[in-house]
Image (spheres, one colour):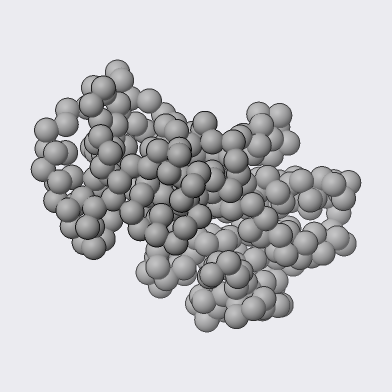
Length: 285
């Protein structure tokens, strides 16, 4: 099986169909040109990061969580809020809009490991490269070739292994493509939201947050149990006493979330939404 590079027309007319993500990807150079938020969300989902995660996003994806966040912050004075692993930044933008509309004084910080990707482009192909300037995905004509996919796409993987050996990256022609929703980028540029690059497996730059949200990042599909324990320890250390941690994952358009209160060296469960977090047992141990 092979994946193809979708044109805007294909994205527009077939992007919402069930088979689109199985067969197509969108060239990252084209995503910034998309103005329709729903289509932008579909395009982001086709991007695969070097750690094999994807940029999931969609409008109002966390609407009920945003309202719950506001309720949890209502009694806190000038709360510090941290949104971890923000993907495209669209959901962070929506959280800011809600908090700001309530005229609440707050500080909103955001982090992500992949705020941009590095591309090397020639007239013949476009390739995403890692920090070592090694190709990890290739957009070659109408084909998408990558070693990041499963062996279900064996043709794409085999072609990638062959063609990538002949690619010599010119460092002077490497470009960086931002991966954030334009509305979120404007908030950062206006200093209304503070963003910093961060890997959740490393200690945080800032501390004493009243509320931390971590959605669709810390789960057993991406990390081992030991790595999750390390990530939770980092999150716990950056919360202030009595601070709130929201951890969850989206399944079939439904958010399964657990909420914890920091009490000393423990995170104590306060509330579960739907089925709660899949890593609840790891968090409380």
